[in-house]
Amino acid sequence: MKIFDSHTHINATEFKHDLPDVIKRAQALDVTEMLLISYDQTSAEQMLKLLDKYDGLYGAIGCHPESADLYDQAYENFILTVLKHPKVVAIGEIGLDYHCDVSPEVQKKVFLRQIELAHELNLPISIHNRDAIADCYEILKNAQVDQLGGIMHSFNGDKNWAEKFLALGMELSYSGVVTFGNAKEVKAAALNTPLDHLLVETDAPYLTPLPFRGRINEPAMTRYTLEFLAQSLNITPEKLAQITRANARRVLKLDDR
Image 1 (cartoon, rainbow, N blue to C red):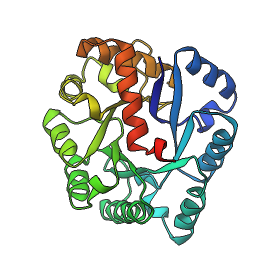
Image 2: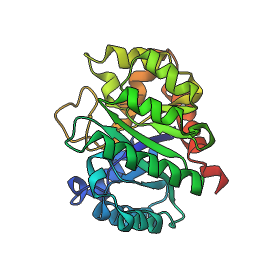
Image 3: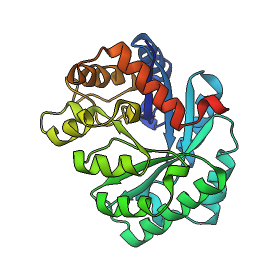
């Protein structure tokens, strides 16, 4: 069995002291591929080091909405430089986060600019949405994202929103949130997501799945989210791992490289 963690931050400072062990624990639980998401210069530089050191790791670079007020030409030039690395395969995470203090209008402007970059470079996008699902949908609806391919990272909407984003050509990635007892609408959305558009992720070090809540999340725990979904969908974990890995590789265009 080979599992693809489609959104992780093992390039974050939380992992700097035991990263080799984090990788070993992931491999021991069949998590063999990961998409590392960078969100600032430090995390991007660490991501590039990891991409050079380990097989099965791929990267994404973008301006997180929490940092949208810092986006300028220098930041964009840095993103473009990182994207020259052959294993950096997506722009992300980008999107909207109305839980943070950055102006929604600034966030929208930066979100749109990065979608433009994705079109210019023909790259898929990884989308962050928090408390902004309607505005996020409207922007994506008018951005021809079906031409790019994209992932709704840690999808947290209900099944009606799931259908809307699927209609745009987006893939829906489910994190440990889907295992939470109070996430019934997210679970219903996952069960309503066609298997050929479903991905799994950790968002490590955040969103640790049950029964490990309270611990730092790490890629190995993708296994538990996958097994939870497989049981809910009444298919084997091996089959779901095969499907979600193929979906991740397709949207990230890994077999075209």
